[in-house]
Amino acid sequence: MAEKGGKGFSLPKSGKSALKPPASKGKDDSSVKSKRGRKVQFDSEGSLDTNSTKSNGKADIPSFKGDLGKAGKGEKAGSAGKSQKAKAPDPLELRVEQELPANTTCLMDCEAADILQGIQENMVVLSDDPAIKLPVSFDRGLAYAQRNRLYDNPQAVKQILEPLKQHGVSDGELCMIANFPLESVDEVFALVPSFKNKKSKLRVPLENVLAELAKLRKAA
Image (cartoon, rainbow, N blue to C red; front, side):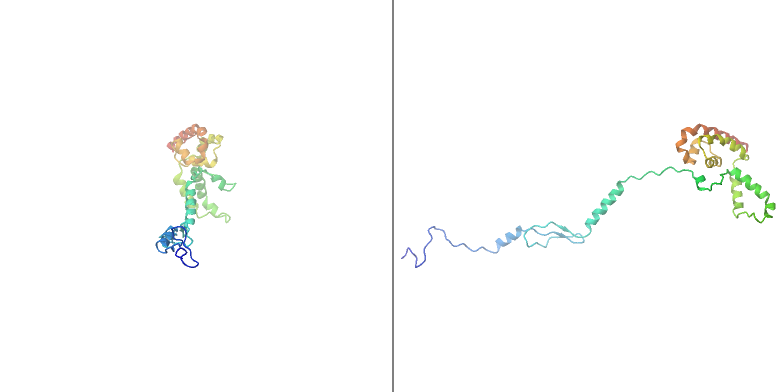
């Protein structure tokens, strides 16, 4: 009777107890929870939020709120714009003749002064013709031409400049040379940028022209 331990009850053969102790819910639960990932978030102002945890036990990738993605695109676009090299501006070209009507002739200041002076001397006769009306700017144009003329003989200046036409120099470019007291070829190249590709061809002819023009200025 003592070995059976009562009706319907038998002791286990091994010395260990067959009953499992219930799992404790304090320390063990906290250790399990501590293994769970903590959710990290940044609010719209960029502050770090580590208080929220995710219930599924998986660690979340930190999420960023705000327009950080747009800002990254903007930075890329800005850096791409800076990387582009600024193109060098094309050299200036004298386009006076292209901008003027086809029947227009470019004149040197000394030529314009003689023509306007002749009109003024015949003003009494011209005023009798109602078809002729002088513009208001006539007097100002005459004063400008007389003040800036460098030579008394326009025909002599034309003869000196004529050889340059053989090298492709236009009438507008010839007038530019005649309207300024240029003393060196480098000054001519600085004044007329369209000569940039003709420097080697024009240097000697320009030296001869400038020397002759200087003689006319001294004679005047």
